[in-house]
Length: 88
Image 1 (tube, helix red, strand yellow):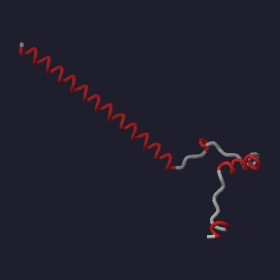
Image 2 (tube, helix red, strand yellow):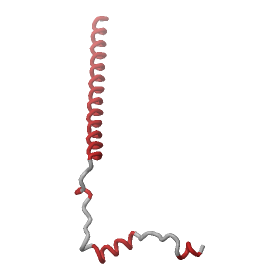
Image 3 (cartoon, helix red, strand yellow):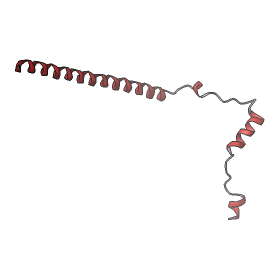
Image 4 (cartoon, one colour):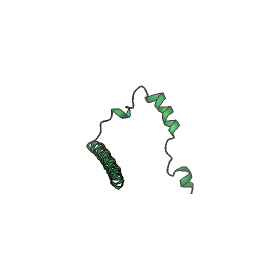
């Protein structure tokens, strides 16, 4: 039990302590790169392209369904007009 209190696993450095030490000693030496400056790996590029292609396919499918629905509405309207004219 005593070992855990005095010599056991040490906790990590706190967030505030890290930034305080960084500003005091290392800010003029080390710089953090902005996120956008990192190059993307080939897997990331493939996932982005795959996601884009899926988006395009889903968009085309939705447009197709809308077109079919409009065709069916028009066909139904024309059938109602023709049948109602023939019945008179």
